Image 1: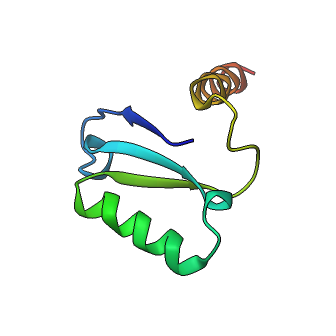
Image 2 (image 1 turned 90 degrees about the vertical axis):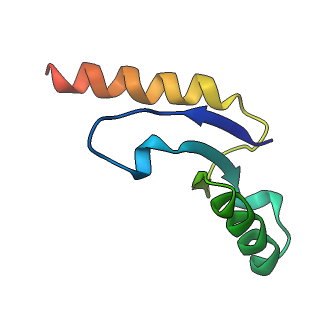
Image 3 (image 1 turned 45 degrees about the vertical axis):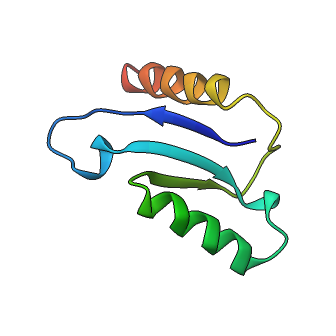
Length: 76
């Protein structure tokens, strides 16, 4: 399962690109993974690879949890 997320942040060209999330476990070989990653980079995406966790997990829930934990940690 792969997902796309648009992130816009002032001052960073890399973060102005849409982000494409892929799971390393979805590819049986390193070569297959690298080909896929390069394909999305050439299309203009910033590619983020998850090496841990379940690839069938809803990435949006995971991203929300990371942001929520970061905000909570920022005020402690």
